Each structure stands twice: as structure tokens, then as C-alpha cells.
Image 1 (cartoon, protein in one colour):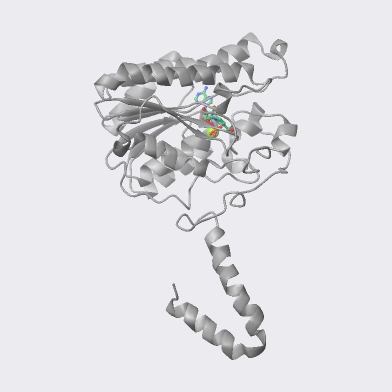
Image 2: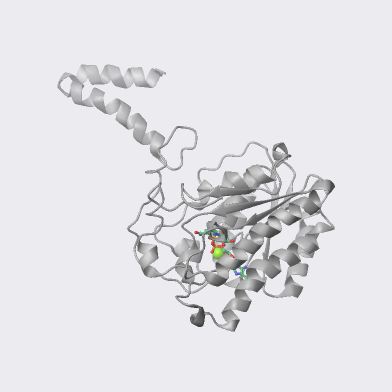
Length: 334
Ligand code: NAD
Ligand code: MG
């Protein structure tokens, strides 16, 4: 397409005479560079160069970590996600909604027209405030409910409060998780194991159970599982067990809830640049090379998964249930 301004630029370049050859050759490159920025979601982009690649700086944060303190700061779609009314009027609860995949889903859901409640740990208030502001900027209601999912009573309260403040519930995203790498089984304490099971499995069970009585036909439940469910790393034994359990829960619950018109699906990310990885989830050696061994040659950014959470919740995906949507840059399973 030749726009008026392109014609004008070209005319001026022609007038410039001596610079003609070089400048004219630059034109398509300028257009390509503009199309390659991560904020642009409408033009074709090379996914291998779209986002930062390893080597990454070594960096460690106390658990649970903050997205805002990562280097580079992750992209959750803050400037790129464009909605088109796919979740108009829906009411969603997202655990771990302050950062990472949860934040990407929260931004995308709000821009698609949903009111969103997020749960997070009190230490993540700073990240959560940013998400609340983004949901409100999208013109939707934001409900912030801090609290610890290892506490069974809190899981019940979380659903009750979300339902009360949203005026119902029709999307539940079980996304929060604990991942602390340990070189050997001897290094996994009982407390470690217990905390991983409680956060990743017990909370998924308790929240789903509490949510069920509110979910009408057409509702959707989404679990964030992992490529670790299928191909576990030697230093993520307890975590990988829980991701397999959550994947399995997705499939059994899809069978149980299918006749009720409630769909249950999962997302299985590969290496994604989030606080979980820099707050004990990965070794410094792994972090430096993070995502470099995928066919994309880089880790994913949460923004690249936001539309997957939308797709699995949207009404037009009405025959998709019991499925796990992989997002691992070409490696991993499913
Ligand atoms: P993240 O750190 O941004 O999100 C994890 C969230 O879990 C935290 O923000 C925190 O709010 C929440 N959380 C942890 N313990 C909690 C507790 N006891 N109570 C309440 N909330 C608690 O990291 P992320 O990578 O976006 O993680 C989101 C999901 O993605 C997790 O299920 C994780 O297993 C999964 N995942 C991540 C990767 C990756 O490479 N980052 C890969 C595969 C799967
Ligand atoms: Mg967080």
C-alpha cells in the first residue's frame, strides 16, 4: 500500500538527490523495524527476534519475587493486548494474577470485557496494584484479594469474596504455583514438599470445589500446568509431580463437568520469563541460558500466552474441554 505520507517521503528523498540510493533502500527496512516492535500485534513479526534472548543477567529475588524488579522486565501485554469483546460481561477469578501468566490473563480478560478478581500473596501488593490499575483502565471492575492459598480456609473465603464482589463467577483460573528447585531429593524438606502440594494441588482442588456451586453452563475452568507434567527436570521433582496432577485433574474434571456444560482446560507453558524463575525456581546457571535451548532460542514472555487463556474461556471454544494447550516455543509437550 502506498500512503500519502510514503509518497511525500519518497518525493522528498528524490529531491535530496545524492542520498537517493541509500535512503530509498532504507524505506522497507524502516517499515520492517516498525512492524517488529513488541507493541505491534497487527503486523507479521519474526517470533525469534521479538523478545530478549539469553544470555540473561544472573538475578535473584526473595520468594515470591516481583515482576517489576526483573531485568529485563517481563511483557504481560500491558501495551499490546487488544480486546474485541470476546469475554463481555464475564466474571473471572485468577490466582497469581499479580504477575506472569496470571497478569497476562488478567489484562487480556479485562480488555475482552470481563470483570476480574486477582489473588496474590501480600508481599506482591506492588505488582498487584499495577494489575488493578490496568483492569480499571480497561473500564472493568478489579477486585484484589491478597492471601495465602496454602491455607484451606482462605481458599473458601477467596471464592466467597470474589463471587460477592464480582456478583457471580464464570471463569476460574487456577494459576498460582510454588516452584523451588532442589538438586536432590534429600534437599526437599517435608515443609518444602508440603508447601508445594498445598499451593499447587490442594488449592486447585479447594478453589474448584468452592467455585462449582456458582458456575453455570458456559463457565470455564483453566489450570496452568507445565511441560514439566510430561518431561520433568531432575531438580523440580515435587513441582513436576504437582503439574502432572493438575494436568490429570483437568482431564477428569472435563469428563465430570462436560454434561453440566462447564469446560475444563489447561495451559502448559515452557520456559517463560516470570518472577517464579528468579525467586528460587531456577538455578543461576539455568537462568543465564533461560529458554536458549528451545527452537525459538529464547524464553517466552507472559504476553505471548494471554490470548491462550482468552481462547480457552471464550464461548466460541465451546467444544474444547479436557485439552491442554502447550506454549513452549517448540519444545516440550503436549
Ligand atoms: P509468577 O511468579 O508470576 O506467578 C506465580 C504466582 O503464584 C505468584 O505471583 C503468586 O501470587 C502465586 N503464589 C505462589 N504461592 C502462593 C501462595 N501460597 N498463596 C497465594 N499465591 C501464591 O510465575 P508464573 O511463571 O507466571 O507462574 C504461573 C503459573 O505458570 C504457575 O502455575 C507455574 O507453575 C506455571 N508455569 C510457569 C512456567 C515458567 O517458566 N515461568 C513454566 C510452566 C508453567
Ligand atoms: Mg507474583
